[in-house]
Image 1 (tube, rainbow, N blue to C red):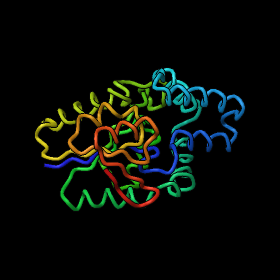
Image 2 (image 1 turned 60 degrees about the horizontal axis):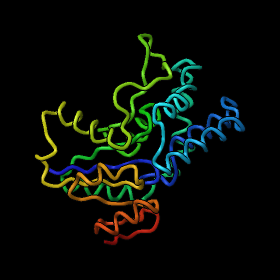
Image 3 (image 1 turned 30 degrees about the horizontal axis):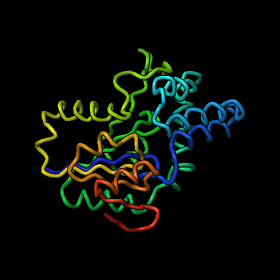
Length: 227
């Protein structure tokens, strides 16, 4: 068996879906740009440093979902996917997904971004298996503004991957080949676990780490691989 895992932001997308969703909400007047951008930049700086408080970030990210009925959120989300996400899809990323499928690999998106935002993006890419941070919903279906379970961030991606495998009655060791494609040094824990780690459009820390260990480096913005 073969398994191909893909991060989303800056890996399959030429951008960040979290940021794109916030920009969309600011354009709609849902979020105050001056306040939101300042807070978002502070979170992004800590993300780059590897010091992000993931729970604080998730509360910040999910709070807008609590303000509106599901019908409105879903309508906005569909518009957002078509107008803001589809143009960001990287062709080389799509080709890589298709190549793995053709070779018989099971394809899974593994992302720290919440499932409200990422579920339709996975669908857009034809990916049926999604491991994402889970946005909590109340009994009436509305979002609570909280996350539940383990966020799929850093080592949490490993935990969530094992949970996903367990539900299928499988273990990672059963796969002869496992790929993981990611841009971020925050994904070094999971990249270190697979036998085919690929640093895609990597940040400086991940690029240095990948070169030291001889991992494959890919630029989905400019076709080509290197080791």
